[in-house]
Length: 215
Image (cartoon, rainbow, N blue to C red; front, top):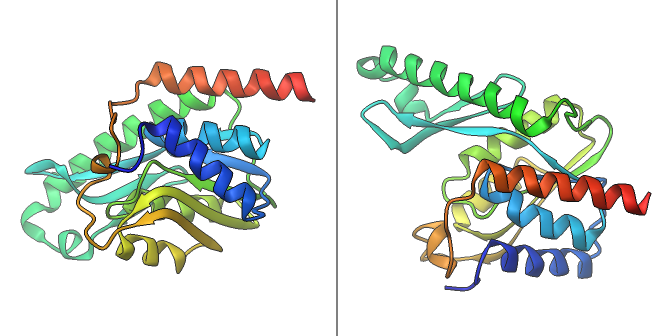
């Protein structure tokens, strides 16, 4: 265990990025838990907070096992061996359709008619950790399609393999902990409760209010 909570991890990550001289226009959290980390990073870097909605694609027979990810802008990533497996093709199509519906619902809920503008901007993608890195890769591709000028990724903890894959895709990738013995993101947190939609919305409202006070 390294971090007490996502808030604690966000503060540590934010101070690390500030001390490293990272300069971005917008901090973007990946719902849900990543938004909690991102909110602390945005506060320390004194940058606006946004959200980029992503969804894992679960295996049709074992939905908790991710075989890919979706992101805004019709980005779909699939593990090649599962995408080519005809045995699960029809069931996988149904799973993807379900997750696309959920993706649209979360876009409407979290953007609140104020979708962040990435065009020409340097953005920092933040999550609470990288296991396979599938959702973060989908988010990075989405940000590119939305015209981001530069894309950076920062997480408290990652598997080295996932971090390396992301580093090859973005302009810079940082993890406070890249553990060769990585098992699961939650093992690095004392408290790793599920983040609710209401918590995400409250953090976004608070960030908006803070930006209004300082503008």
